[in-house]
Image (cartoon, rainbow, N blue to C red; front, side):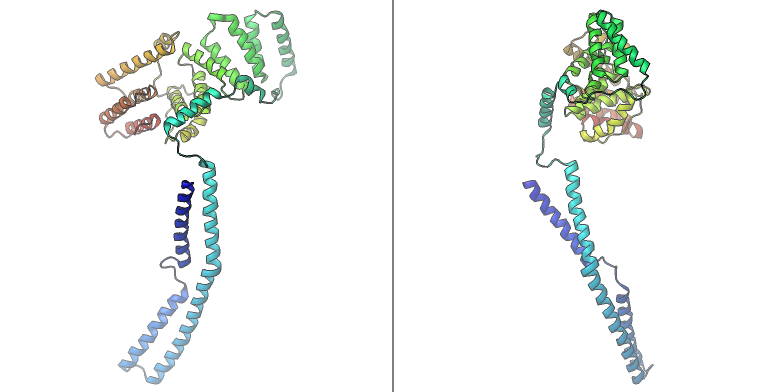
Length: 405
């Protein structure tokens, strides 16, 4: 209620100031009749001066005064008519329309961008709410049940549909045929039957066992998310975690992880993940297009003044580092990442490096939650690159993305 009271008082103050200015008129905005009055008054004074100097006679001065006075009366009547018209009809109508637009427009904008009924939420409260949302979100089964039955793609070849039906019957008779289930999963996906596709893919994973690759799990997560209409369920999240534990650089899994964070109230985390994907590239990677189309909206939701980076200019983990991260537990991977950050920090302190490396180090420290260290590195980087405008821009955008001052 206090918010609405303060808002109402501020709105009334602005409207009163605006109304006073519109009804009074702006300085210098005078009608022609006002200028005519000034001229005629000057003429009367000029007649008196000419009479005093003897330039005109008393009779001529009287006739001139009579004519000028007549013109003064006409000009004054025109001026009063203009003021009444501007002040009562056009002026009031214009004022009414302006005030209505301000009031209605302000309310409409607030209902779209604001949060009526909500108080200010501290960062800790928002993070806590996001965690609750993440834990209580619907399951894969619930999400799929809420969608309409999938329809076949337009202009599908009837012969292809017949072949897929034969494949379905074949895998029933050969349940241990890995290749058959793999082909069925892809075929169902092409027909838009994503639920059937991820069911077949799950069978592939079960048959492969320990030989299943990160790509297998990444494809399985993709089918789960497509079957749920783009929603990342808790089941899909578990598959994404399995994928990233095997290959931390898997692009589709990282994209979907960012999507999941955006769906559960953490656009800031999604922005960091997607920004790194853009920087690492490559430009023709299949996840670049969806990230590019959504990242600016994600930055807006995160409250970050974001500028699109050049795709493929960042530095991702090396092949040796990716291979070393496979099979590690989450705690061990975090320890490994910390070691990579320490190594990069030491190299920059002793050998220096391009501004992209400094930005990567600041971003990594932000992800690890070491904000004081990230801020110290930011200050040091600004000292190193001095007045270089390009470096200053990269560092400023990195600071905004991480959340530094």
